Every structure is written in C-alpha cells, then in structure tokens.
Length: 296
Picture 1 (tube, rainbow, N blue to C red):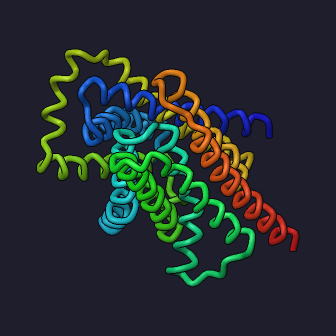
Picture 2 (cartoon, rainbow, N blue to C red; picture 1 turned 135 degrees about the vertical axis):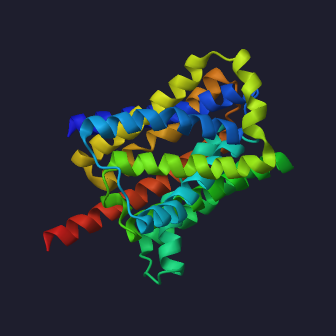
C-alpha cells in the first residue's frame, strides 16, 4: 500500500515539474508543437528497445492501428498541444489545475452522450467546479481567458481520450506497446500540423542555445512518471490513484511560484482548493461505489 502511494506521489511530482521544464524550453525559442514533437521523438526509441527486451510483440492489425490513431492518438496529440499552448498565456499551476477537471468532464460526457444517470454527490462536485473556474477570471484579460479556455479544452479532449481508451479496450493492450504506437501516431499528427506552421524546422536553431540535457530530462521525467503511476495503480486502484495524483497541480502551483515567479493570488488559491475539493469528492464517491458493488 505504502509502496503504491509513494509511486503515485512520485509520478505526480514529476508530472507537476514537466510544465516548468516546458516553459524553460519556450524561453529558449521552442513552441508547443516542437516541444511535443521532440518529447515523443526522444521517447520512441527507448520504448522500442524496452518492448524488444521485454519481448512484447509490436504487431497490430490495420484495423487496430487505424482505431488507435483515430480515437487515442488524435485526442492525445490534441490534448498535449492545447495544454502546452495554455502555458503561454496563464501560469503553469493554473493550467494544470484546470486540466485536472477531466474527471468531471468524463462524467458530463457519460451523462449527456451515453445517457448515464448523475448522482447527487457528482452534481454537487460539478457545481463546486464551476465556482472554482470563476475564481480564475479575476484578471479579465483576453490572454488570460484564452489560456483558461485552452486548459479547459485540454481537459475535455483528455476526457474523450480516456473514454475511448475504455470503449475500444486500448487499456487492455500491453502498456509499453500501446505507448509506443501512441507516440508514433502523435509524431505523425504533429508532422502534419508542422506542414502549415514549420515549427519543427524553425526550432532547430534553438538547440545552439539550449543544453540537450534539458530535453532529455523532460523525456526521462515523462517516461518515469508513467511507469510509476502504472506501478502504483496496481496497488491502489483507479480511484485512489486519481486521488493521490492531485499532488500534480499542487506541485505545478508551488514550482511555478518558486522558480518562475508566477503570482499566487488569494482568489487563484481559493479556486484551486475548490476544484481539488470537488475532484477529491468525485474520487471518494467512486471508491465507495466500487466497494458497494464488490461487497454485493
């Protein structure tokens, strides 16, 4: 149990630091597309070697590859782009906290699209979430509102990604094989976007002024965080993993305040606390529901 908690908390800390590293790369001249592209390019050969060592088959049918590209790869790539773009307009802690609204959007999509019933604790949590979001509109600037919109959209696309993961049973695939093809699909999609933006070509000159270890650190943090959360979830289950993962936005808020001099107003802190309280309420309710079902 303690090993699982430690693994998930370590994953949350590492993922909470990633936005900080991303902003440093932005300062060096990279943009959202190039950061996402190089992050996946670096991780792809490592995943390939891992699959070979583990002797995991990388063979997929054309249908599986098409479904993975369309349902998982697309929404994963869009989520990363939207979230990375939001860092340009709002503090990293604020963006990460808003992105963590994805459990609420998963529930909303299931209620609206799949006609699932909504319980009272979930409804109360959604109302709390709305109050929390309003706390972030204190500045009223167009840039700030654009950043908030991008972070909220990233939460919606990630919610869709998680739903598709379960509906098409991608979560039953070997995790390393799935991540390999997810990265491959993301690279292809980013290259298509690059045809219109030329971001990747323009970012090549940035390597002259940026130490390569920074990009390597981003890759290692990302990979190790995914390994830790996969390991921890075996001991804790989905609900408890989601609960302890809340340390991620807290890490982003604190690291942004310490290292990037990002302002933490009373209203923003209040908004973050309200949103996290709502997510904790959802996680605990889901856990109680699972215990009731297993008890029967």
